[in-house]
Amino acid sequence: MLMTHSPKLTISVLTKNDTHQIRRCLQSASFADEILVIDNGSTDDTVAIAKSMGAVVHVYPQWQGFAVQRNYQLQHAAGEYLMLLDSDEEITPALREEILSVVQQGSNKLHGFPALEVAYGNELKYMLPRTLGHRLFKRSLVTQFEGIVHERPITEQPCDSAIFKNRLRHYSRTTVYGSLRKLAQYAKLGATKRSGQSASGGVLRGLVSASASFLQTYIFKLGFTGGGAGFLFCLFIALEAFFRYAVLHYDQSATIDIAER
Image 1: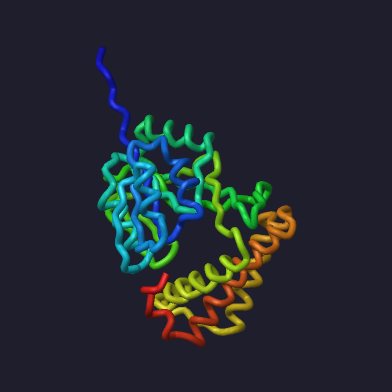
Image 2 (image 1 turned 90 degrees about the horizontal axis):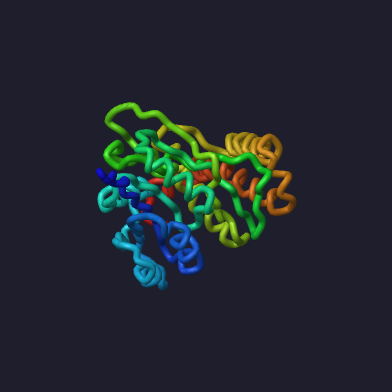
């Protein structure tokens, strides 16, 4: 009887100093044929833990933006299919079965994942999910990634898109202090992106963007159903929208340096 060969799946994770969450992330990806970690120069036990869990690890300590790190994932992945997973994400059992089904069927689409946000220990399960980009695809379809933040895959030919039904659990905000640090990082990256687009900044522009963002996430996307955790989650997203335009106008020197992560 002729045996068919299932396409090989690589799940790749970007890391830096993720001792507190890397085990959970990699354990959820253990069904993959290959687990690949691209590390940004961790000084804790992240690399050792990843290797102990069977991951192939490559370390690139110089931070040059998310797209560059994604391109390292493309470069080193051995699988026919590549899934991009962040260290603060977790694949649920239901999503795992859906991923395996898509790979087994030989899909030629770029697949996005709806997010199940976990904020400050609370699942925001009634909040309408945002889609976490194109994160699963046949590796031969994608030539490279572009973009300082919210990077996107570039393909030689147009490809159809699809979104999974089951959600990817995303532990995006676990502490208020961590959220403040993330706010500074993403405000800077967002300002850098908009600087390249010749966008204007300032307090008024930031207030408009922040107000629209909070209204969208807290009201229309039902963030209010998450109680206090939902409010904080939506507030930090809005603050990020405000400060990216404040940085763009008042701290332009910060937008040309993306070496800090």
